[in-house]
Length: 193
View 1 (cartoon, rainbow, N blue to C red):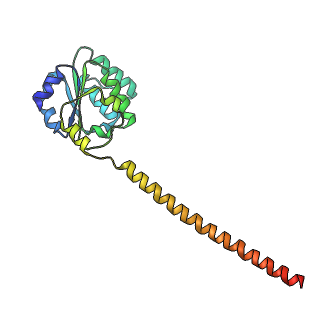
View 2 (cartoon, helix red, strand yellow; view 1 turned 90 degrees about the vertical axis):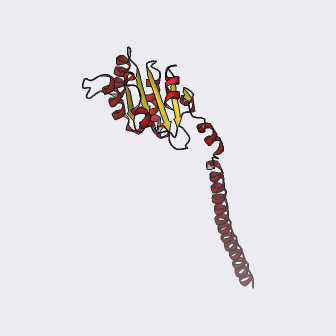
View 3 (cartoon, rainbow, N blue to C red; view 1 turned 90 degrees about the horizontal axis):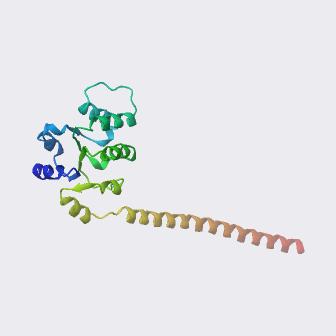
């Protein structure tokens, strides 16, 4: 797998792996590319600070995330940076903007690994990646998303429950009206006599 990754990296493309031991691949990766391993994209600002620390040894304190990303882009103008990002499926909308900005830099390559079958937040961002492992396609095509089916069944059950409650209330109201009408007739009959 490492040879296949090296082949695509030479083309300056972002890579997407599926259920691969990314940390082991990172450990044998060539150090001239300044590789950095991020165990989960949920680390947010901490991950961005680690990435900056990999390319610039100076201390950067009290900087905003956009400033950190700008500094990373400045520092990588003349050197390569490879970001190994594990558990890519945990990417949230917030972190998505950070990695999208980093992916636009031609000297930064993101090697991401998906470890669980989940819907990804942004399929458009996924289009920037070359999918190295064919199992990603086959496994995702074999899995069936039952989310909408369950939602439909749940909606129908709620509808039936609501209908039953409403009909029972209507039955009480009709019975009450009928009893009231009978009492009215009875009182009216007694008064007329």
